Length: 170
Figure 1 (cartoon, one colour):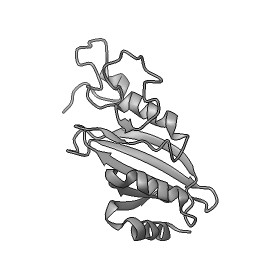
Figure 2 (spheres, rainbow, N blue to C red; figure 1 turned 90 degrees about the vertical axis):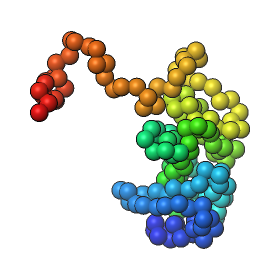
Figure 3 (cartoon, rainbow, N blue to C red; figure 1 turned 45 degrees about the vertical axis):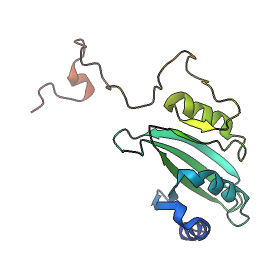
């Protein structure tokens, strides 16, 4: 089973819902629409030809400069029987960073969705217990969002030479 076959099979069933595809390091990456992501993932698990029976990873990414696509939810699926991996990307806007939970499809998504919520603030609709698991409950921000400067410009105790930068930026 190769990436071309996998992509064509998914496009055959969900043509308009497949936005783009690429292969990185031998793994097929497909961008799909948020509105049909649950149905596509459910189909991938239940399809006897592809048989994506294992959710390896679910995580978030923040792209603050990508208007109406500021957040991505990334799913890594694995078919043990057919011996291939598949990466799905779903982009959602910052105004409403929510997507349907896939806990009903993969039980292992439970804690992964909670972690993604905890660090990115992405809401997984229908999740049985969506709350913080690693950060303090009273935090009013999501630490993995790229909303803050990487460095404190007011610090005077840093010497740029120790961070691989010259102090005179010509």
